[in-house]
Amino acid sequence: MWIEPKTNWTREDVPLPEDFNRIEGNIRELQSKPGKPVARVRLSSALNLTASTITKIPFDVVDINVGGYYDKANRQFLPPAGYYRVSISLHAFLLQDSALSTIRLYLYRGGIPYNHSYQRIINVDILAALDNQHVLTDVVYANGSQALDLRVVSDPLAAKIDYCFAAFEKI
Image (cartoon, rainbow, N blue to C red; front, side):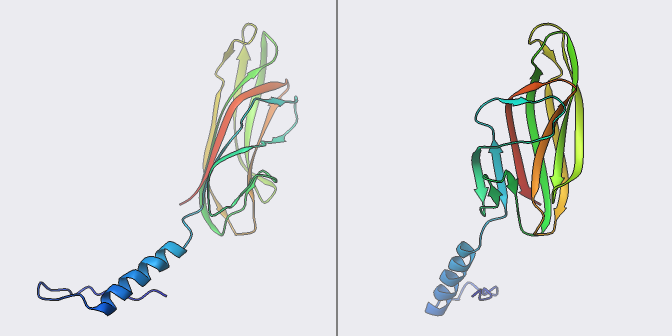
């Protein structure tokens, strides 16, 4: 239980045992509270995207998971109610030369698309992609029962993601 700290100390004051007990008790109280929900996840290997198929990104490495709200098995972040900043960055390329496709990144909230970004990806020669770094950052409110997840699609051609990471942070 939190006990209000003494704030009117003077030079002549000497800490008494109850002051130390209050300080130590408050330290224990702060240590028992979980930190602000934060997760950082990434892919450990390349991901092949089937053409025109929205794919939930299967993040399989969890670097940070304060509060334990990132569910690796279900590929989603299920935090307590609040506002969250969600960011994703990936590098993708097409699997054929002289091709054009569009990569779309989606932020889903409660199984429903919340926001997306897209960028065209062009191969001018075999595996020589142009404009292949893709980023989506947004702020979203989750009500405590809404999972947040990230999805991607390459349309109309198949593509490959060679690295991808994402972060979820309570603000």
